[in-house]
Amino acid sequence: MSSSGSTSGAVKSPRLVVVAAAALVFVRASLAADVTTLYTQTGTDATWQQLLDSNAIPIGTTSTAGVTGSLINVNNSLVEVGPNKGNAIISNLRLHTLGNSSVTRTSFSKWSRWYQEDGNTQVFRLFKDEVNVQNTRPNAARIESFNPDIDWAAGDGWFKWQGTYTIIKPLGGAVFQAKNSDNDWSVMINTNGNGDVTLNHRTGTDQVLATNMVGQPFDITVYDNGTSYIVYMNDVYRGYGSFSRPTGLSTFRWGMYVGDSVPARDAMLFVTGAKISSNVTAPPKLSGSLGALPARVIRGASVSGTLSVSNSIPVTSSTGAARLDYTFAGSGLFTGSGTGSDMALGAASTHALAVSTAAVGLATGTISAAATTPQAATPTFSQTASMSVLDHAIGSFSADRTLTTIDFDFGTLAQGSGTASRVFSIFNRAGSLGAAWTAKL
Image (cartoon, rainbow, N blue to C red):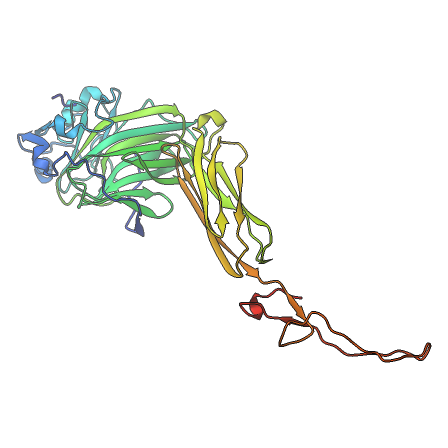
């Protein structure tokens, strides 16, 4: 085992969180959740108060001495699993610690209290009561890694981060963030003291991705282009969002960061196979719409519903995103199904589905589309529509029965003797569902 940028945004205070409808917990069944099998520890670590009392770390200035700690030996065969297990640790990493915001690799060993490496796994630790000490910002304890060589502005294309997390000792805070030098963070992956994992949007409603994940590796993938981002957990799409960053450069950061709070307990997190890819092909994004149906039609009328599907991922070139392939189908008043495809920046693909007008009454149906391209963002679309189908008007000379002909006897009239008239009435008799569902005459 070898031991091995600055952010000012605080983790958001609690707010509305929804639990996504998809399966919450993705567990590799071969792995035991007992964290004691995942590592061994040699030595002990001083308490935060002991460090302060011994002046082991300076207050109010950047430390270059660091603090060493106990040795963590990762059980690599259990921890390094899944698609990222073969990714070597990025060589040109820097650390943002509570005492120094840009520790270079040559000094990692000095900071082993908070950061170590074993195989392809990074070990991040924070301890009870720790706070930022390099400047006057309160609380804000952290141990994060980042690659100073990879950053991007809005319009530079899509960048991808991937890695496998294993929560060993859970703590509330951020374990991943896309961070901009001028506009702060856009998206975070957060955990809490129970090991629950949350997708934390800068704007919009947060999503609980999984619960009780202590000791159970899970994969996170994030795409970001300096404006929008896409998040996956265990290769399954979980969220899309946008946050304007018109200036500054964005980067990926991962580790542990507690923002405005103070760690209530010791914490430890493993990240295996973290990898950053530049200027990648973006996954497609399915967007759909359904053209408006007429509010009322006559039974038997010929009507169709128009489904439009587009690949709306924001790119500057159609080759910058994968092609969107999808299926579609109608139900209820809509009939028909099929497949389609669409390239980014092109015109939407349209599909006409027949609309049944055979039955009088309120007709309701749904048109759905689902991406078949792997990792498509917003991979499904569904819209329900309804319209009133009216019975044909029933013209009659009688109010109580259908009478379509009537005879009038005008008698014998002498030429030039004037006019003769007869009075008659025309009624619109109600159809099978009553007058409300019968067309006007």
